[in-house]
Every structure is written in C-alpha cells, then in structure tokens.
Length: 234
Ligand SMILES: Nc1ncnc2c1ncn2[C@@H]1O[C@H](COP(=O)(O)OP(=O)(O)O)[C@@H](O)[C@H]1O
Ligand SMILES: [Mg+2]
Image (spheres, protein in one colour):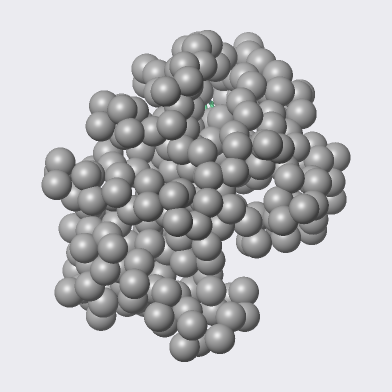
C-alpha cells in the first residue's frame, strides 16, 4: 500500500533571539504512515514531537528532508510545492488538533465544529448533521450552544477534536489530544479516533503519553532527541 505521508530525514533548527547558536530540534526524523493507520508518537518532553507534527501537518517548514503526500490519487511534494497547493492539500485532506485548541471565542461549540465545513462550501444541512454526530461521539451533545469560555479545558479539547474531524480528513495529526482529559473522556476520545480510522480509513498520528492509546494504536513510534528511533509493529 502507498503511504499517505512519507517523510525522510527531516531537520529543523530554531534561532532564538539573543542566542548565538541555533537549537537543533529535529536531526533527521523519518516517518511513513499508511492510509487508515493509527500511529502513536511517544517520547520524552522536548524530543521534538510537536515540532515534527507541525511540519508534517504543513503548518511549519523543514530545513531539509523530504515530505511527500499521496491523497485521493494525487502526489504532493510538500517541500517543493507552491503554497497554494499546500493549502489545498491541508484543507482537503489534513485534520489538526493541537495542544492549544484555538476555538473561536465568538461562536458556539456547534458553530466551531461546523466552521471548517462551511468554509469549504459544503451544504449547511450536511455540515450540521456531521457536526452534531461528532459532538455526540465526543460526549458533547449537551453543550451545543455553549460558548468556548463556558466550557472546561477538557470540553474545549473535545470540541476541537470534533472540529478537526468534520471535513473527514484523510489524515489527522493530534498533539496530546487526551492530555487535559480525565480517564473516561480520554477513553472516549481514543474510541472516536480508532472508529474514524476503522470506518472512514482516516490515518492518525498522535503524540501522546497515554499508555491506553499506545496499546490500542496500530504502531508506536518513539521519538528521542529529534529522531524517530524505534518503529515497533503492533
Ligand atoms: N519556536 C521555537 N524556538 C526555539 N526552540 C523551540 C521552538 N519550538 C520548540 N523548541 C525547542 O525544541 C525542543 C522540542 O520541542 P517540542 O517539539 O515541543 O518537543 P515535544 O513536543 O516532544 O515536547 C524543545 O527543547 C523546545 O524548547
Ligand atoms: Mg509537545
């Protein structure tokens, strides 16, 4: 099977104001993810997981290395492609849940989840249906009209996960999506992600410290000091 994303030898350094030397965060990280595969990206804090996820999700650029997507029969060379092509790829095929969930404060939970579908121009009735279904699957059907400030951190995180899935992405990148959640809700989110993968073929790359997620993922990739070291087939 052709991987949906294949990244090789990705490097990244940050230049911090006031410091002479750059901080090297990624030292040649590589990853390959098959359609529908759920990969847990584990490793100590500071290993480079968030940086790697941002680059894979096309929100930041690599200094060197290659990143290739194959989505809906089309090949994308992320390093060489024009920004407009990357934006198209991101909007059509990539879902993103990051630690800071960035819900829009002026919109309700339901409107936040619907937003990516409406921006893409899908029919409102379809988007409404998908958004309600997703909010139900993350246990938030009783909070549809709440504003983000009226939700707890964990509830906001669940809404952000529903929002990331509303456009039915081919691949979802999630940075510690269960980090703020108690074990019941973490378990529910894990179920949602695995169900999406099984029923819709959504690939997931999830940075996590959760042993439950690691156990239930198809594969665990361990990141240490800017490299993907182990690659255990589960
Ligand atoms: N924008 C940045 N500027 C400077 N250093 C950064 C920046 N982003 C991340 N880092 C550094 O890169 C290292 C890896 O960070 P990160 O990717 O967030 O790791 P992880 O998610 O595995 O905890 C950390 O030491 C962090 O301080
Ligand atoms: Mg991180």
